[in-house]
Image 1: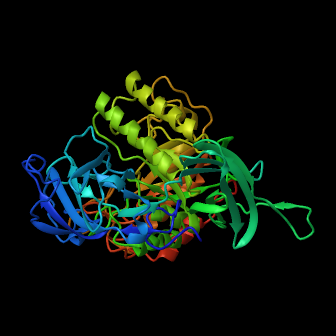
Image 2: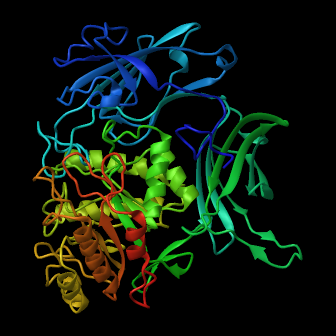
Image 3: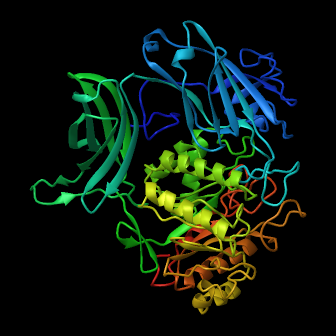
Length: 595
C-alpha cells in the first residue's frame, strides 16, 4: 500500500516527515514519588538506560525487573532539523500505561490517562534551536478500577493474569505538520451506493473558497476517482464514488474486501490554496459491509462462518509489546496456516501495524477493551473515555468487524441483575453505535448479555459428545436464560431477552500438554500429540455440528507466561503440525455451514 512505510506507527494516516524516537532513553524509578518536587521535569540523574518501547519489566528493555514500581521517568534529547523548524511538531505516544505527563525543556506539554489508546501533544512552543530535552513521567498502580486487561493487580501472577506493564510500551514518534493541515479522516464504505463516505477535520486560519481539499482514490495503481471541495469550515463531510466502468463502459465494479480477497483502495488527501500544497496525507480503505440477519453475521451480504482464535498478543521477552514488525506478521501468517480466518484480540488494543497487516492479509478481527476489575463511578469514567478513544483510533480498519467492550462480566460482576451495571453496558453500546452504526457490538462476551448484537458463549468442555448434546437440542432454554450453557453461567442478564441474534462459541479448547504440573490449561492436560489432535478434532467438530452456531473462537494462539494452552509455545513454535489443525478447522461437517 502506498500509505505505509515500514515501522510507521500510524498506517491509516501517513504523512511523510516523521521521526521514530524508539531506542535508548535515560530512565529512573521514583518509588517514593519525589521526582516532580525535586525538579526531574527539567532533568534528572538516570539510574538505568532503557530501550523504548519495551517496559522495564521485560528482557528487551535491558532492565528486566518484574517487581512493581509505581512511578517511572524517561528522558532523551531531540534535535529538530532546520528544514522542519517552520512546521508544527507533534509528539505522539502510541501507548503508555497508565498516567503520562510530558515536559519539553522543562515546560509542561500535557498529560494523558489510559494505558491502551494513542495520544499526542503539540510541543512546538516548548522547542528551541539545537538540543531539546524531552522528559516523561508515567504513574501506574494496582488499582482494580483501572482498565488493565490481563495485567495483574497483585504482587504475583496467578490464573490468567500476568506481569504488569508500566510506562511506555508502544512507539514514541515526532511528526512535522504544516500549520494548515488535515487532522483527522473517518472513512465509511457504502456498498449500496458504491462509494466511500468521508468525514474530515481540517485545521486552518483561512477557511474559505480558496482553500481546497482534494481526495483521490486508486486501486492497484489505477486511478479511480477524485473530488475537490472548498474548505469552508473545520469539519467536512462528503461522499466519493469508487466504482469504475469496465472496458465497454456498462457495469460498475467494486473490489470488495473479504478474507479470501482483501482488496484495498489507496486514497490520498491534499490541502491546496491557490494551487499551493499545504499538506498531504495518505491512507487506504476496504469496501466491505457487516450486517446481522436471520441469526447470521453477513459480510458483503453473505453469511460468514467465523473460525477465530483467541490472541492475547504476548511475547516471552517483551510481554505485550511486539519485538518488531516481523513478529506481528509472523503471528498473522501462522494463524492463517492453522486454518483460521479471524482472531479475537483479547484484552488488549494491539499495535496499529498489526491491524494494518490484518487489513492487507484478510484477517477478521474482534477488537476488545481491556477490562477493569472493580465497578465504581471512577471505573465507569475511565472505561468510557478510553474505549471511545480506541474506537475512533481504529475505526478505519476494514479487518475489524466486531467491537467487544466487555468480557465475562469482568468489572461488572453484578451485571446479571444489577441495573446500574446493566445501564453501563447499554450506554456503551449506544455510544459505540452512535460513532459506528456499521459494526456489531458484543455485550458482554461469554455470558450475561444485555443488548448485544451477537450472543457469545464460553465453554471449555473436554468431550465433543457432551458439548454437542449440551447445545444441539437446548437452544431455546439456553438463550431464554433457563439453562446454563456451561454449567455455571447463563447467556442472558435478567430483564433481557434473546431476539434472534447470531450465536457463537467465542471461547473453547485451551488444551495443554502434560509437563509435570508447570503452568496450566483448561481441563485435563494431554500426554501426547495424538491425544491433543483427538481432543481438538472432537470438540471442534462438535461445535461445527451444532446447527445454530455460526462460528467459534479457539483458545489460544500461543502460551503466555504461566498459561500454556497455546497452539504455539512462547517462541511461536507449533506444538502440532499446522496442516493437521488447518484440515480440522476447514473440514466441512454440516452443509448448512461453511465450516
